[in-house]
Image 1: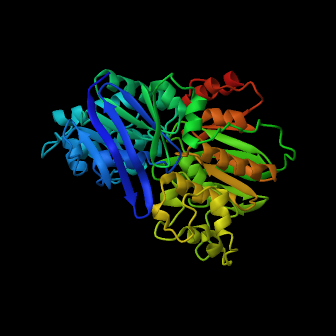
Image 2: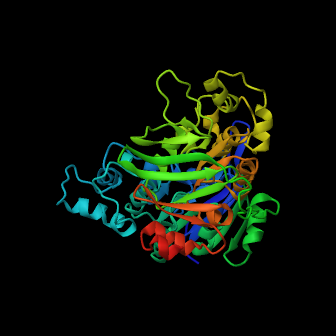
Length: 498
């Protein structure tokens, strides 16, 4: 058992009438990976933000290194050797990866050059974690997964004694995730205390030593890995038994093409699509798998009409859709869940009701008054129509967008990482509605980082690499995670994976 570096003693955090953390007591120890699990809005991130000094607790005591005064702010947390990687990144998009890392590095001199020792030191862990990332690349040209890696490197560079990672694997590929798990275990072996906030049981199985489960702001259980089964942990998180019920991919009942990409090429912000042809039939679910940064975001934005094509076209039921001309409606017949809902699908200053009505406003229609029903059906917490969207947790904001895009029948669904950052119950809810759309005849194009889910539920899986579809595999029961992973990495040909 390692040294206790930080301790929560009956800590409570209240925002108005909302009790986000309720009398939580917990120890963080050196040389240990502590996984903090719970459904969206359970208080996991808020608890660790209290340790990081983002805000002071309403009640209770946080003891750091034996000092009962806690941390006055993030700057002091860094001085005390506490680093935190948030779900929402703190980077300057216009600057290069190198400059972002140098800005966050406490030893950065007043001058720098490529020959400066500081420049070499600050890039050391980046080379270990992601040797393919060019340090001279502007951050805005990186994929979300690559930005996540840069954020992780920033914290690893401060040589913190306590490292807090908030959903660090939510946008990483399997290979990146395995590499991160290795780094986490190495940090613990070096005596660092690692707090891993996650909803993925695979993260827990890979590297957790102890597991703290939160529900409705309270810590309901703390155990060592192996003391409880994964199903018991899920039950503790949800307060009920939750079974994964992904539908097995069955042949689409009507293979008539609905959503069609014909020889689509496009370019934007350092990304490129090359001659993509893909058809999704009525009632069919086609998954798209690929290493982060290989064109998934641009593909989604082209299909949704956000980015223009340089060649080719996107058709829905034979009608051309895509980038609208000035003066045309901003609405799209697609149900579209984008990669970053907070930035790309909501207006934080508006209420939940207004955000749900954005489609109606774009189409010039009146709202149908179903706001409360949608919030309840998609378990948005709290289901208060007048509440400002910016006050929701990331998971609940994701559910809000899913409610708007999946809560009404659509001819096609474009889902780009639709369950990113969601807990198990919320994942099941989103999948239930997404696959119900397919069962009703919608064409579903599903971009995901979770190969297991794609293999469990997609009819076909397209592999994207360097902006091109390099393989389109029928999911007939013989397709494996290893085969898809090899195609993603360029280690297998289409014939080898067939």
